[in-house]
Image (cartoon, rainbow, N blue to C red):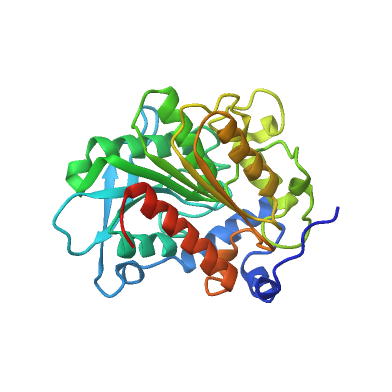
Length: 322
């Protein structure tokens, strides 16, 4: 099927991206990609940014049926009062990554907005299929709010944030918090979120063997999470938030996505359904952006625009002047 072209500047990065993350990931590739991720894992020195950010790891209780959780806490090294928190669920297609994955932009938020970032290390599929990861993420949020004073967080100013699979998990946690009458988060930043297992949209089938996270990769991720239930009836909206029939009562959302990626249409539809449910949402479709373009090409013009838009939305939500 035809698709929008890649942004010319971003297209120059795709060969380099493909050396690290080819378009098509199959089940047999998962172990190798996890190993590569561990080899390139951000160190404490990377996270501390020459001492400007204080970094700590906490072990906290998990869900009733789950193991203990590891939470990574990053905050300004010097501050005198409680701060808003960004509760982060990392990306990786439900099959890769850890609490340090994709933190570069969030560390910018720590420095520019003075927020505390709490990043959860949830269990991965296929070893731990749904609902393990979602329940881990929800349990970590509950602990963060209930013990906010222990980490200098204002429990009334917690925002969910995640990229790709992490964006899907952030959306799921928002649904869980609403349905279970849990923590009252004030916003959700859903960056190119992975929301729908059903391949019902044109963009879900436009990319095969090109770009980042094509149709084959997407099937790999959903099959790892859901097994044979993927794309069938009865899948929980806590696994695939696009399946939720009632999106009312959710916190305001920032949603963005590239025009040349698998998740484009499901993300646009989710934003439209939030509006129809009376929920405030800001939507950006970045022209020519491939999946995760701002992570792989942070200095590109389109990446700078995307990061600036997210920062501006967060600043307005939190009432912080830039």
